[in-house]
Image 1 (spheres, rainbow, N blue to C red):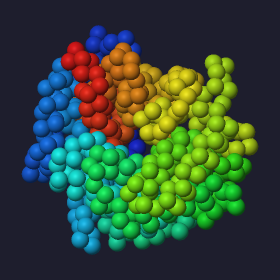
Image 2 (image 1 turned 135 degrees about the horizontal axis):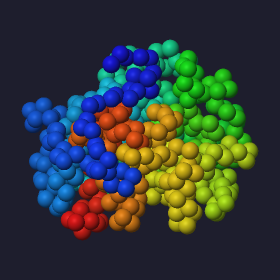
Image 3 (image 1 turned 30 degrees about the vertical axis):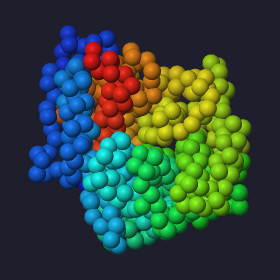
Image 4 (image 1 turned 120 degrees about the vertical axis):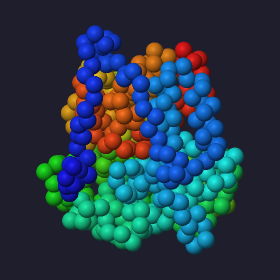
Length: 479
């Protein structure tokens, strides 16, 4: 595959040969899973990190899964981040862990946080795993201090940026891989740190450097409320794809400063149309309150705690005033707004998403979320697709008729409906096209047409879903 100058073009659909599926093998609407999925983990000597406790968890959980393909898929996917993407090391005598996304040799703040999240419950009993995760938290703090507006950093902080970033019109700093400002990239490291602290009780990563990084996060969010102008961040990229660059001289479309926090780009790395991205603002409320708790109890810094809590409260109030849209079936959360009254009604597969609100963020009104969920998982959402290979949400990043397995995982992990979950599991098995792994996206009518054969976030998230079901719905996996 020829490398091009943008991530989107470089990772466009990779067609793979798969056995043809006859019409007789089709369930209503969706194709059947292959007869047997391959056991596709690297051999032990090639795995980047090994944990006996993780292997024990894989064995114990797999035995509780009646469907052999589902068990194989879980065993392949859950450890994929540890098997293939982590690079443990040390910096200034402390653990330092890089986590690449898979087929891109760089560390996204969002992806790296999400990739290691499912291992937190095991870290309390595994010192080596706990040290690995401590290294991720410490590395993220270093990255944030390099540039809080960057979404991705090089595995080697002395390496040049990713090829498609070289000509970007922005203030690209040493160590940065790509400089697309995404609000969720400031939230995910807080979520990981808070989860690590709650699961392990370990406070060693939360030193002066981490405190400085968290203070910078709050500063950056406050600046991006844009009450005193657009702030210092701008970004322009020469590309035929409109979502690769920001309009209005790189500052994004105009906003009315109503208390929400602007984001240049979505978690898909696509440019926002209206800079107030609602799933990310809801995520920010939750993350800021987690930071306030840690500031009180771990850092003993009441000033930082009060700043975080005050910002969370202001954003929460603004969400109630500006982020709720009227539809013929009732009110729902909008996806993006500008504070002037314009609202974009859609959802994207990448998280934070409206669909995934119960997973990442607080959505205090259950009925409002239920209506939003019904809207985004329907043809009313312009990025919802349904075909013979499955149904789910995609997004502009990959394009029309491409479903992201991540959306199907999100649909299942936020559901209490066994029928919904079973339907998602069936389509997720099919979506691997016989590879035994999740992908970034696949064609709604042909799972063999997919993007990104090595996408560790989707793999590990699927493993997290199965672990979640093993704990909360064991009978469903037994059946």
